[in-house]
Length: 308
Image (cartoon, rainbow, N blue to C red; front, side, top):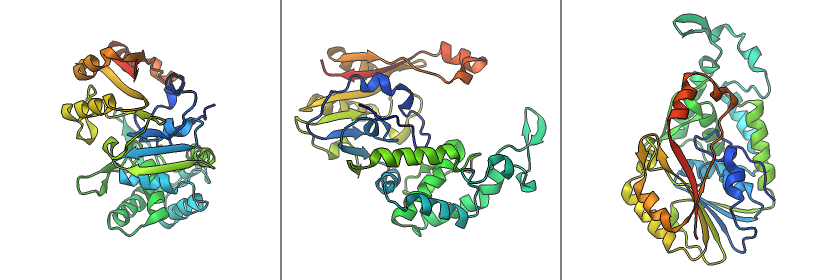
């Protein structure tokens, strides 16, 4: 049995669209702990019907958020914070009503001045103030968790970045806490009930699985042009060597080829493994126009790698 889980924060690269292709290759039963390493959106670990799951990611802000999601006061705290910083909440007031505000302004689209259909101008002051309070250390515990969720959802491209000093940075985006965002929050809270879930800030080096456990990994993709977290060839080799020493079953998500870049290190290592090629699914609006032609011409080999 699996659960239908969508990314809480609209993370790039989350596995919601291909969960069926991944989970069908997982063990039917896990006697020990299921480890979700490089857990990010936690979609995979939350989707399986297993009580004991440990999520490991090096983003302390993200792990703090997930560790507080099950708190009964999470939603009320989040919505109170939205009010405090005078930001929009389209889960309570329709987006169309907000867009009637004269302060929403206009924007330039394909050379023409048109009404602004985004909520950015209504949220920019509150967003900036919340970011300052967050980085100043004025928010703790559940308040800090709610603030991180707001900064991400309201941020440009639904994203907020972590600087080298640990502080957050990022600009305002067009969205807010929508009906869909609230639905996903409640979905996560329901799925997390009555489970033994742990959220660890760290890397694969911080866990020691035993024979009864199962390890799933979704590390940064060396072949992609998006080298987040500074992932290097040495990091890739270190992870693959660690996997070879695992005493338990495991599964690794990755890509062999992205565009014109091939991950030869991974490809060569995987020759002695069981490789499942993933069929990528695109949204309906992505099937037309020039952008789709580029996608179709761009080679992308996404894989799930398992032991033989």
